[in-house]
Amino acid sequence: MNFLRRFEVASGIAAFVLAIIITIMLLTPPYDSDQLLGGLMFFVGPSLLMAVGSYLHATRESKPGFVILIMGGGFLTIMLFVHTFGGVFYYGLWKGLAVLSPSAMAILNLIAALLVKSRTNTAAS
Image 1 (cartoon, rainbow, N blue to C red):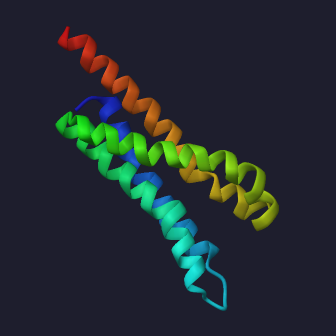
Image 2: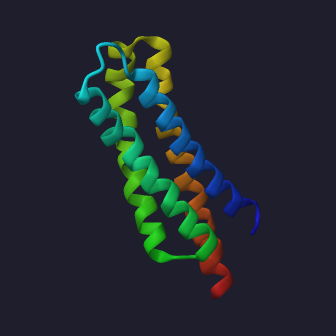
């Protein structure tokens, strides 16, 4: 496994871990099921898709893994723009910037996945 494949897997796992940390960080008393479901739906779910997809794509060169990675990473990339304008104002500066971290890892992961895919296609030709 070369550097790009390792970076793809590592950034997928890092985005998942950051999403779990942010979901825990955003839970405030009184603990509401809406807060937990929102964190699972907007952070943990897409980053889990991204982590599984990056693993499948990098280690097994799987096309369904790339599609799963694009789905999770695309959602987190779209949420980057939503959280850029709303997250900082709603959560405050530091929590708002922390909310952006899984989306930033998603963009890095998508770039690494596209580079791995282009190098694989070039080597196959």
